[in-house]
Image (tube, rainbow, N blue to C red; front, top):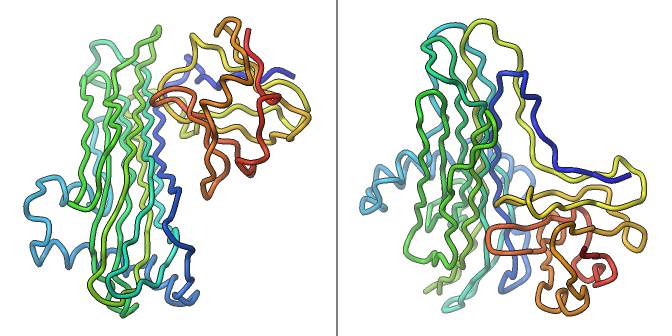
Length: 326
């Protein structure tokens, strides 16, 4: 059964928000120096303490976006009947033990995607979507007193009919951004959307033995106001075949900037069918588009700012025969 990119019900008053960060190419293997109890403590307050402490000490005073990027939550206030749906997740990606004068590095990719239904000239109805994705590198040599060493984050906001569209990138000195795809607003019928992908490298040499922990923070929030209020969506763009073998269809005209999940992909049985790309030799194309492993699956960059994430699949399991162009 052919699978298609999901699209919202245009009869519904809605907003969507997505945020995610992927990490690849660690310079060394994770050490797992934190116990489960320490990890739970870190996620449930330790990170907030470390961020607040860094702000109080003025460590990142040169970055005006630091404070807003790591605010506890987004505040949304709208007139009329309001429905707010938010999701905030803090997860420990990995911990590492570094010797004195050792250099640690990894690559990263952060993505935002926002969609709202466009509202024309209304004072009663509004749709708002906000999201941010970030990571912090913590010194957890003393796990009870984590200290912020470095950070990266992007945040976005899209609102109608207020015509608000904001996008912010923020990073500390040891984070080098290599590709920043600043989003353009796309309009299709009564839908407004934007997606952005920012990638780069983290690299730092430590003067003394240090335990560090990489923490990912994702925060999304949507708010719908007005009367009547029909419904909400807060979903991720995905391709899925519903458990049946067949083609995952990617139409060129519909393939906007962002990252799309491919779920239930059966290696050797399913394939990705690129429609509208023309007669392209899959073997030659695949040689120039090698997927990389992430903590969520194999990530394949089709073009700058546009990628496919094969959930639960390793990069070395994919080959040219999994792709077809027409």
